[in-house]
Image (tube, rainbow, N blue to C red):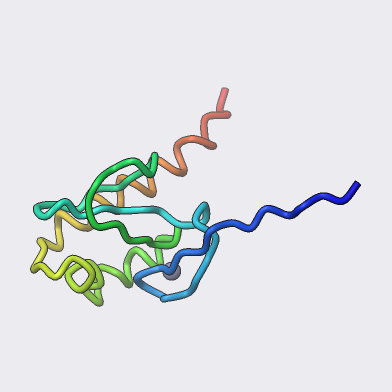
Length: 99
Ligand SMILES: [Zn+2]
């Protein structure tokens, strides 16, 4: 019996602009006021993606990639906070082994 390989949806990172499977990226949304991490993929608003990678996060902040995709002049401190929390949440899930 032949198994069909599931094709994952590809999304492009706003920092490095590489296309990757959606589950290797973090989705963020912009609702017209603020950027928020979208961990469940259910938030409304303009969505965009960033690698699950501190380097891409830093690049996105430095290059003001968020300003570009949101067409807004966003507060850099706020963006850093949102990205930092999203990355922390991802790492926190697998790092609870200590006894
Ligand atoms: Zn990237």
